[in-house]
Each structure stands twice: as structure tokens, then as C-alpha cells.
Length: 336
Picture 1 (cartoon, rainbow, N blue to C red):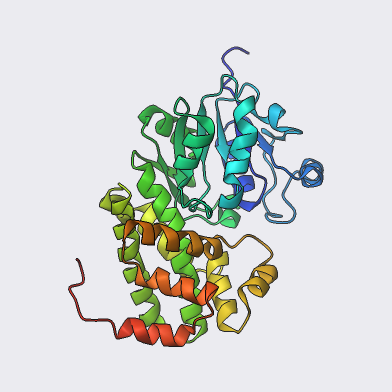
Picture 2 (tube, helix red, strand yellow):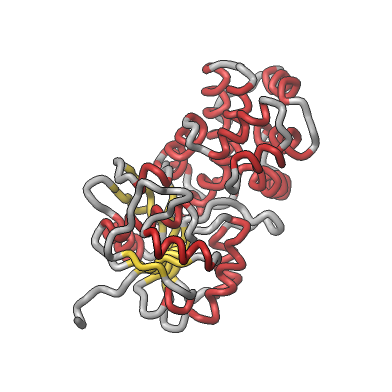
């Protein structure tokens, strides 16, 4: 019994947290899944699947649903947090006094904190201190496809190479491939900005601007992502990989993306609030546009597409007029 590997805790029982828990278990680990909604946890325990989000992905036998946060993290190898960005700090705040000897935390949360403009690793440093080893999981992934064991690749980033390698080993299976990186800032920026660009892609397609416009938006959006990332200390090559270009293209072009669907609904005349209600899940790009607007202004980074999306979402600007304005911007070199 002493040689049995310690279990892994996954905090967050929404679609992505559930999919990650299933994948870790599928790859041969003991996993404990926990969320804040007690009735939902009871349903997960009873149904042995997440009937609301992933009804076609039954739980492996090695996946247990924990009854409390303390039970979930007791004696684990490490904790993986998979909650929306607006709940990230509160989750860490609950977690901090119960960590005990657990000093390794990873997360699949994407996005800047709205109130502060901080990236998740900065929030984690404030709430958990500098002694905790951290890692970030990100990449072009839809929860439903991971749940169905369709081929998928992600990036695991940490400055502790051994921690990144351990997570990558633990989560990899024949249909799931993990790559490692030490640029966790770049991986986080990619995951934060792509949601905003995806809203724009959905809006563009919904307004029938065409495939040329969609690809121009994606490509120039990538340019904005790189500029912001470099200003925050990330490496340019990170944005050419899974957590940058890969996640951006996936989120902008497939209707499994809530952010893209949000943009499509806006193009049909829905208000942001009505569109979010219709989707029925968190639309990270909506709140990310607000946070990103503040971050770009603070750093003095030129992000015209993201700035226009902020005006559309929060100031009632006309999308068609803003697209025309983007097309009339002064001619300049593509890479500067």
C-alpha cells in the first residue's frame, strides 16, 4: 500500500473540471473531484457522470467525488483548480488554510481577474504565498471532446520542470498528449486574450463579414496577444504553440466555443446579458474584455481589436462601424 501513488484533487465540477478529472483518472490516477455546489456533487456521485455538461462521459472507477474540500485535498500529490476566473481567488482563499503539507497547485483557469487585472499566477502568489510550487494547464481543448476521449494536446507550464513533467505524465494517455513549458506567463496570457478575440470572430461571422474577415481578425488578434504577452514578460514563441495560436484558432472557429457563440448571438441583436443567459454557462470573453481593456491601458499596449470589442460590449458601439474604422487605420508594416 505504501507504493500506491497519492491521489490528485481537481477543484471545480463544471464541464472543464469534470473533463480534467476524467482524463487524469483515465490515465491511471486516483482522482478526487470537488465543487462548491453540494446538490450537484450528490448528483455526480449518484449518476457517475456529469449529466448536465458531459452526459456521454462516464466516470472511471478511480474517480471519486469528494464530500468536502478538506476530504478532496487530504494526502494528495497536488491540487488542480479548474474554476472560472471570477471564482479563482475565492477558491484559493478557501484552499489556503487547509493545504497543510500540500505545496503544489496547478490550475486550468483562464483570464485576468476583473477587479485587479492580475493573471492567475499573481492571484495565487497573493493568496498562497511564494512557497507553493505552481503550474498552468492550457491549450486547444473542448471539455466534451476530452470527456469522449478524442485526440487532444495541451501545454503544462511551470518553472519547476519536474512538476510540469509529473503533471504531463499523469494526464497523458493514448489519445491525450501533454507538452511542457516554463513560460507560464505566456500560457496564461494566451488563455486570457483568446476568449476576447473569439467573441469578435463570432460577431464577425454573425454579421456575415466573411471568411477573409474572420482570418484577418484571428491573425491581427494574435499580433495583439503577442504584444501584450511580451509586455508582461512572456516569450514570443509560446504564442506560436498550443496555448497561443492553437487555442486562439480553436476558440474562434468552432461553435463548441461559448465565446464564439456569444458573438454570434450579439450579431443577432441580443444584449450581452441576454446572450449569456441563453448560453447558460460562464462566457469568459465578456468579462475578459473589461479586464483586458484596463491591462492594455495600464501597460500602454496598442490592442485595437480588443479595444473595439470592449466598446461594443460595454459602451454600446456599433460593430459594423468599428470594423470599417479598423479597415481605415493608417497603413503600417505588418510586424512592428
